[in-house]
Length: 260
Image (cartoon, rainbow, N blue to C red; front, side, top):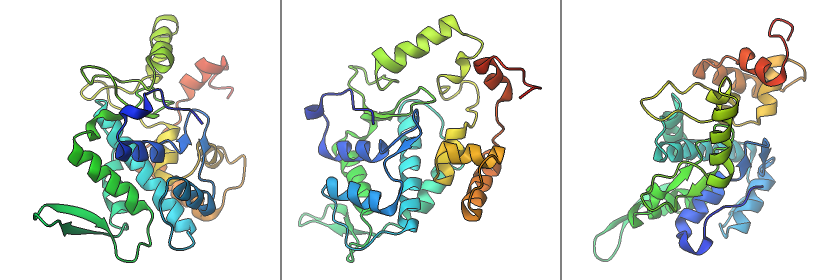
């Protein structure tokens, strides 16, 4: 997995937890740290989040939905529009996280985990609320390079950072725009108000809670995919109106579109 490019000591604990939560998948490599519910439980334990019961496949799907919904929020922090339906899906997913409102001795409101402590995802939601109240939430962003989307702490003086690393993703996009303008349009997510944000395979995978490879397998039919997973992917494709960009693929591979 990639490592953060920021100074660890400068990042508040609540922000760091959310950042690590989002960065459990590296979309550039299609590498997800959560392949099974046990992986999710191991990550929670590693972050000091108590897991009161054995996690299930439903817990894993919910965690992935929340993770990718939060990523869309972090992309909005970097100046991008969220994918259609992404925030609505995040709101729906959060209804399954047991939280309750409390008041301290001075009457100030706050959130707390549900009494049963059954959902470790509540700790992540509480961290988001803490970051918001501390004023650090807006500095957590997602990289504007479309294939990256890595969560990072914006250390720029005027809080205008767009890349997880200027030396990495920032320079890569700059060089591609100069050397390969015909396909560089796919490298950076457009800012809000610019050209419409077109759905990519990553977006379908994120909405369906699967890997990009699984989406590819559903589209091509090259590998048999379980019925429930295939239905989730097909629903995400329809919801996002995703269409594989065969012309861009041909430019990248040097193959004729008609010939595959």
